[in-house]
Image (cartoon, rainbow, N blue to C red; front, side, top):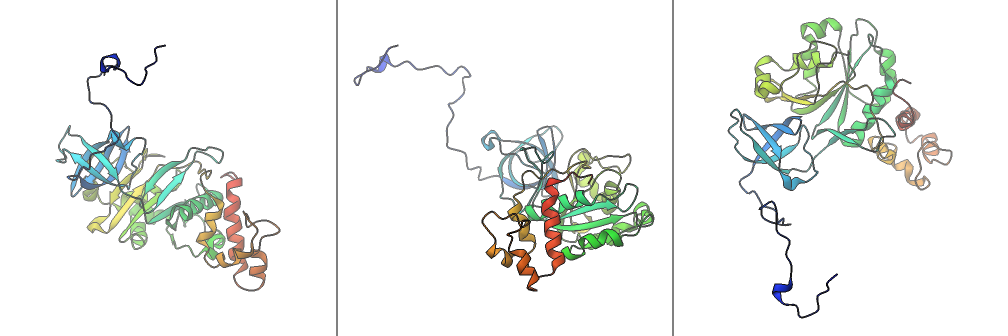
Length: 336
């Protein structure tokens, strides 16, 4: 192997040619000052459908973003052809900081988290009271993901004509979670939309629920046909079949009153990514009681200071029970 001394001649230095014939890479990134802001409506195999002003624009992620991925709800900066005409393609060059994130993993021992929705204000957890039977542990998992990601939860209970909601609501009464109860008849004729809509005004709401609970049918009644035209051909929500939504899709409410984001029906909701210490932040009345807790306290162990705090009358015992039920949900399967 040849070694070069201090005084090498320029001709002695071998340079490797660039076989691709393009310019060498650089750490200097273009500023893209002409970029225009848009919102990601849906993502399909590397192509992102974005709303720029009142136009739907197809885009792809710029190379300089590296592995950083944009998801539905992201605010992004776009350059290129923004006309929205057929066969045009723009580039996403920046992703704005997110105000909230709904994340999940395939199961609790899966270390790879998936960001489902960004920048949503609330999470509507749609659950049927019967046919199919409600799954409280899945609801608990969605609540933990909402609290962890900075979303306000909303319970939407459907098919109240088949079963009463009282027993299920008792589990969540001490969490102060807003809820809506609708019947199957209201869902089918669109009356449920009027009851739910008042909770959506001016907000971006992500809808989640397992197949058969009426989630997509409800979204269809919330978003009239003329509003769905905003997303053009990307709207895959039809309301027919057992599971009609294959990827998350943002749809505008009438009168620019907000957005709903329909997500695919879930069979499991892994929480491997959730730090249990952040769940208690959804219980501000209990947070002061943790000052006496031992380091790395799980808040569900003999030395936890919350037991004494609650026993002294500083908080409702039912609130502590609710916290511990949510914390334990990571250790259970959704079918429990």
